[in-house]
Every structure is written in structure tokens, then in C-alpha cells.
Picture 1 (cartoon, rainbow over the protein chains, first blue to last red):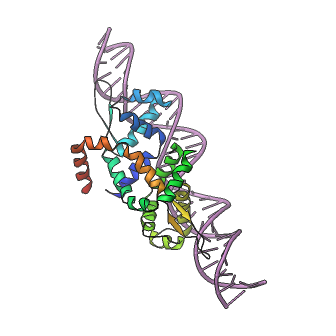
Picture 2 (spheres, rainbow over the protein chains, first blue to last red):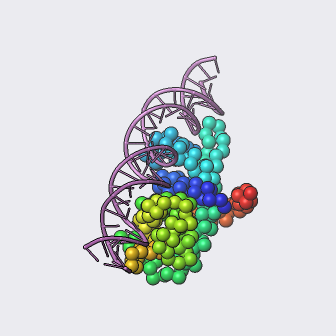
Picture 3 (cartoon, each protein chain N blue to C red):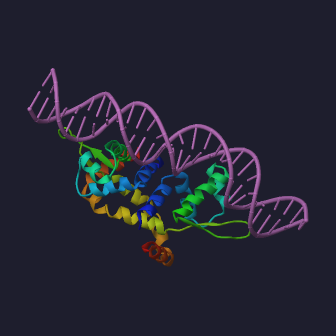
Length: 107
Length: 107
DNA sequence: TATCTATATAGCTATTAGGCTATATATTAA
DNA sequence: TTAATATATAGCCTAATAGCTATATAGATA
């Protein structure tokens, strides 16, 4: 995995609209309009988000009549998880601090 | 985990300089200057990156003489990994496409 | 107290990001 | 071929990001 690709993956994931899109796509592929509706955003804005997700490799596009169905591509998510996994030993080692952190976030 | 916090975590991770800092800190805490040296960046620029990492909860700061040692806080990394983990079943399901993707990245 | 070292902050610049509206393009349907 | 539907692109605006230099602050040492 190259640095530039991780850059794109993590920055794609940094936006809550895009994470919501991925979450929706985990339930199955969707048209652009189906993604626009719950977003409260304009169609062009959603298309722009989709382009960013596509450049990160997180979604791919099909073609069905006039629609361009969007589907989740999980490989980059795995790549990101692998990067994070290198720190797994570390966070296991500092279990107490972790507990405190997660408790703090519950509020 | 709240959305705004994941925003900060993922966007902190989106920058290669910051990922390099975390990688360095995995080997142990470091002073700001120790992080500046290999970065090729100015000290204020590194301090700015550290502030972003700190706001994401990814590092904490100590106090030792005039230095402010920086240490890794792995809890947010775990939080990010947990978010990604929700897709784990998904990427296991599409193993072939994943293989192709990772092969492509090797080049 | 004066100075040195380590770090932080202020303020500037260029670029990117995320939103919008208006319009173009592609495919289907009449 | 014309009209309708779905999506993409262009162009604009504002705010945030990443870099810099110059300067301020905190703590240690002379």
C-alpha cells in the first residue's frame, strides 16, 4: 500500500457524509438518487462525494439504464484496517488508558 | 464513538507526515525537535501537526525541563479500527476482488 | 538577572474541500 | 426526433489546511 493511496482512503473516510454513504452501501448497491435523498444535500454535491470515494477505490460504478449504480469496494477499508493493525499490540498494552478513553466518549 | 471524533481521527490519519509521526512514536515518546529533524519541515509546522494529533486524541504531551515530550495514545486508533471492523465481513465476502486490488497496489 | 534552549503562537500565502446553482450529457420512452 | 430522467460537469463562494517566517513564552543555566 502506497502512502498516497492511504492519504486518499483516510481523507475519504474523514467526512461523515461519505461514511454514511458507505454505511448505506454495505446494505447493497444504490443509485445516486437513492443516496441523495437521505443526505439532505444537492445531487451534485453527492456526486462530488462519490467521485472522492471512487478515487479512493472505496466504491465502483456500474451502468443500468440511465442509472450509475454505486457499490461498495471493501479492499481499501481492509488496507486501512491493516495499517491500524500495526498498532494493535500497542493499544492492548495500555488497556487502562484505553478504557478511560472509551468511557469518556460515552457521555 | 461520536461522528465528530471519528472525523478528527480519520483526517488526522490522512496526512503522511502525521502518520510518520505516529509511526515514530510507536517506538517510544519523543520531543518535538526529535520529530522535526527527520521530517524536513519547520518546527512550527511540526507543532501544528502535533496539535491536530492531540485534538484527535492520538497523542498526549508531557513536561520535562523545557521539552514537551509527545507520546502515542492508541485509543483513537482502536476506535477507528472498530469502525472499519464493521466492514470486515464484507471484505471477507469479496475475497477475489480484494486479491486483485492488493496485487495492483504492489506495483 | 541575562541568556540559551525548546516549543508555541501570530500572521501570511497558496491550495483544497465542501457546499451551492446552472447547465451539459447520456440513456430511455414517447 | 423530442422529451423525460438520471447523473456529471462547470463555475462560484467560503472555510479549512499545510506550509512558511518572525516572534513570543517557558524553563534551565550562567
